[in-house]
Length: 269
Ligand SMILES: O=C(O)CCC(=O)C(=O)O
Ligand SMILES: [Fe+2]
Image 1 (cartoon, rainbow, N blue to C red):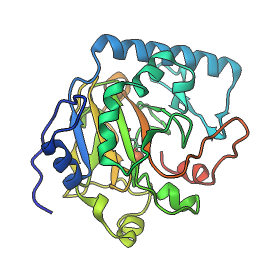
Image 2: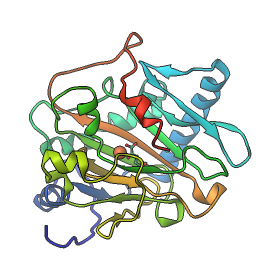
Image 3: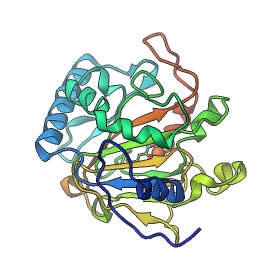
Image 4: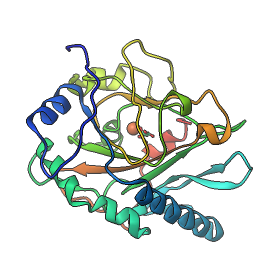
């Protein structure tokens, strides 16, 4: 693969030829300033309200997908992995239904749609490094490996990430291996040990993003979230992910079973 030229773009109502080529070459693309600071603050506020509700009602899962709890630097119980947030927060629903996200469909096979009712819906990850934290990092993986755990054929999909905090080496940051979305199935399965490996890679790229930015990646690309070298507030990193899917519509509801994959995911932290 040719050497990467890290670039940031602006998302309009249609992708430019350059944006399409960049994404197809590297397997990810970074759009700056998608939402304003005020819009992101409203999202954070709604997630905090949801967190209080889930904690007080001791909600363990939504549509079969476990919710991950932990503690912040003040020993306050927090939700570290919310799922299907678009079903509970108007602000997050508005984000996933943002008309400009339709521009991304050109990168997918026909029939692409935002996964409002599929997979884990809109996930909100909240990483914070505290002593004994169980969710301060996420080892190397591809998101598409889930399809294999589910015994399904790998379907191309895009993970759309919205940054709720600035993100860089300071709070760990997303690290990607550009171009690995084009690998064969063997490399997808065995390039690295899933989740248990969180070592630096000489080819990894740190994504440096600002609050309100959008970074999207191909589900087949290898990536990880590195641990922050700091504790507490300085290590905080919140990101929302929502999938863009094609293929058969597979909605979840309150009767959906917990996929096996999630037992394995527990090893990840
Ligand atoms: O937090 C991130 O930016 C990445 C999270 C991730 O890779 C995942 O949840 O699958
Ligand atoms: Fe991931």
